[in-house]
Amino acid sequence: MEQTIPNIVESPQRMTVDEFRQISEFITTHYGIKLPDFKKTMVEGRLQKRLRKTSIKTFSEYIDFVFSKQGKDEMLEMIDAISTNKTDFFRESTHFDFLTNTLLPQFAKENPREKLKIWSAAASSGEEIYTIAMVMEEYNSNINESNVNYSILGTDISIEKLKTAIAAIYPEDRIKDVPIIIRDKYLMKSKDPSKKVVRFTPSIRSRVEFRRLNLMENKYPVDGDYDIIFCRNVLIYFDKNLQERVINKLCEKLKPGGYFFLGHSESIIGKEVPLRQIEPTVYQKI
Image (tube, rainbow, N blue to C red; front, side):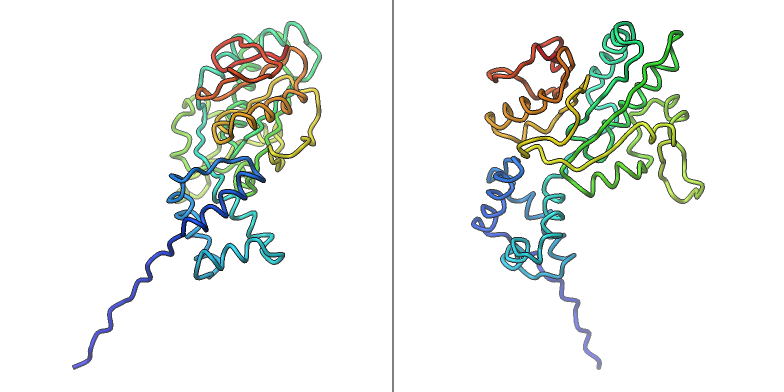
């Protein structure tokens, strides 16, 4: 009688405390992201996928490879894997209400011939930027006076997330928070019914630009005349001193009187920054 050999499933690799600290100290030093001990399981889970992808057997070997000259490309993959965070369309919608009801009418009245320059400094996979673009287009389509000309820059540390943003293609279930009337205007369904994805129209895509940028850099290689900067839900991963440094460096790129948006769990309280509060998590450069 032929004997059946059972399938052997390899157990996932486990990361030691020392291995986790090697990675977390490097990420914090070079990218500002805090990785306290309770994040070990998250980091381990995300990097297990990189071990499988690279066919590396242990975390010890993976760390040696990542920090070697040959591991330069994998270093970027590791950073992408660890720094990826959740984002949604129309997240914290009160900011977009303020944009529509207060900021844009004010700008149109005071600067009728100027271009409104907007920077999303933690753009991730593009949801925030495309939300801003849709809000701008809706504002322009609903006013009788001249339109507000605008441009939007999105920067992020993750190359993979930026690739998604540039492609502007999202699963249909990701756009559930986009009002239906707006979806019909700015999102196109795939011609293949089996592909449940949508893509932003060329008119929206032409308004946005994406670049890679690490907020830990000493200087940000962007223009110094932005009217609005969004930096939402990224500073929570930095310590207080680094938060202050990043806000000040961002404010160097903001016009006097320009607006600065933080996430709802973030604040400038106790920080020496050139901003005054206008609304909850909405600030103006002094």
